[in-house]
Image (cartoon, rainbow, N blue to C red; front, side):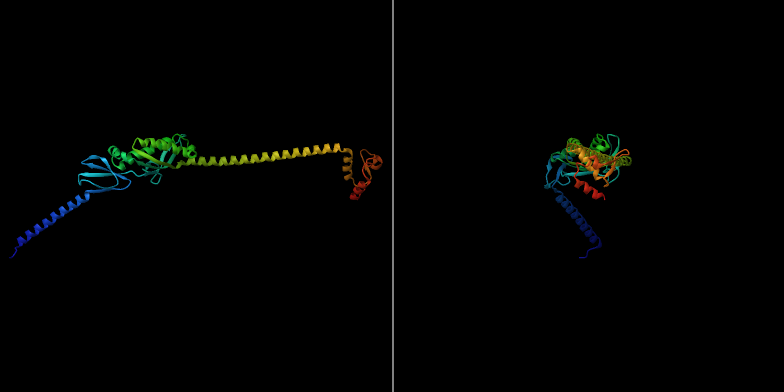
Length: 307
């Protein structure tokens, strides 16, 4: 039986329609099959919406079922999350994640680089979604402004120098205030680290000059202490010498001072018997009796030394 051209074209059109129809049905079936299942990873929690209505049950990690095209799942992370303001993306508040501009108690401009770790409680996931929407919106509109305001408020309570010298105290105070404010927004602070403080060039120069002056002052104090110690040593030495002379004088007086002085004089004698002792008179030491108490052997030894 011969098939006309029109009949052939009609059969082709019907075949194409069947292929298209079956393809659409198969695609819908695949969508329905794969859309029926969803998984929640460890550290995440799921919120199920049915035509916009939020289910009171929070989806735990694992495999779950939902009605395709009717129910939708919003995933929230309950892991520890990190927000950094560390000047990697710009300068101060001009950039979303840059260091935080603030004024210290003494009105010095400061930039504070911080790292904040936090998480949200599992039971608060639904409340967070109802109030703030998605996780990104919650971070940008709630968490980050709280961190900025808290760090700036605490920085204003300290002078620029205290921000550096009392960094642990500043970090602790900021963490306490931040923890309180987080608790009102369904978040829990895990840790807050102050990475660095930066000041204006003028203030940094002034700090450097102050450090140099402090070093010079410390050096002057050390030199003054050295001078005092040396002076005390000289005084002690002089006192010791004076005491020694005093003891020696007392000893001389106790054990025949006149004979001792005569002996010391003879030690300086040039060996001649006759000496001039004041005025124009010539005195013979032997005849005058000055040498009577000195043994002859001693006088002879002294005389031989000077010859």
